Image 1 (cartoon, rainbow, N blue to C red):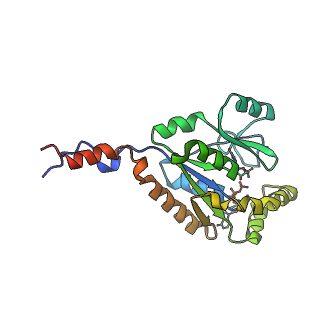
Image 2 (tube, rainbow, N blue to C red; image 1 turned 30 degrees about the horizontal axis):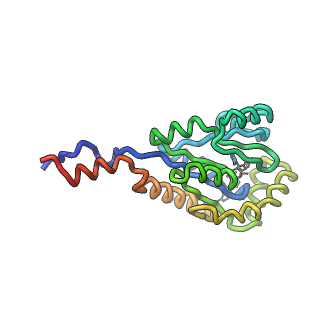
Length: 219
Ligand SMILES: Nc1ncnc2c1ncn2[C@@H]1O[C@H](COP(=O)(O)OP(=O)(O)OP(=O)(O)O)[C@@H](O)[C@H]1O
Ligand SMILES: Nc1nc2c(ncn2[C@@H]2O[C@H](COP(=O)(O)O)[C@@H](O)[C@H]2O)c(=O)[nH]1
């Protein structure tokens, strides 16, 4: 018998989610984020605003919006950020407008932000937030990754290594914790988390109508 349902199950409306990835500097957030953006057609990067100077190869508007301190302060005053924080001597913030509109339209967003920003987003938008913390396999490997990335001075690397344990101490403020040892295994785990979170009943706003039609089919 032909289906009388007005909606196809795989096109049901869904509210977007906010997948947050945090870790000590160098554990691999940017790497996993790039893989997700490449392989998953339904998630967008939330591009942060920062007062940090660009690293070689970083592109304004893609990796960050690079601004001066005065412009950052003006954005704070204008309420342009969903969250912002002072990290490693610079200001970083998540612009509000695109994310809020996108979530309503069912888009998922990926955030590479620290624990302070995660706490702020969770306080504001708890039900939309999925928090993932990446751990390095060892402190020695973390140092090796920061050094071999080749983007920061020895002084900057030393500063980030000095903060690593303090960053790791926030691991218990996250929903999921993944050790980034082998990159493909780590990526597969994050992909599985994303797939499961998309199926949460509360996010599937189109389910109500679909279930109603299943329970009360039109004869
Ligand atoms: N599983 C892995 N095995 C080996 N090297 C890795 C792995 N994951 C990431 N790397 C490498 O480690 C370095 C740091 O990774 P990445 O820049 O993604 O870290 P991050 O957490 O985004 O750091 P930051 O917070 O400073 O932006 C990069 O050179 C990256 O290629
Ligand atoms: N609270 C926020 N933290 C952010 C944001 N954008 C990036 N970050 C975090 O800053 C550090 C350093 O980043 P880097 O690119 O200079 O290595 C890292 O932990 C990021 O996750 C933000 O908008 N808000």
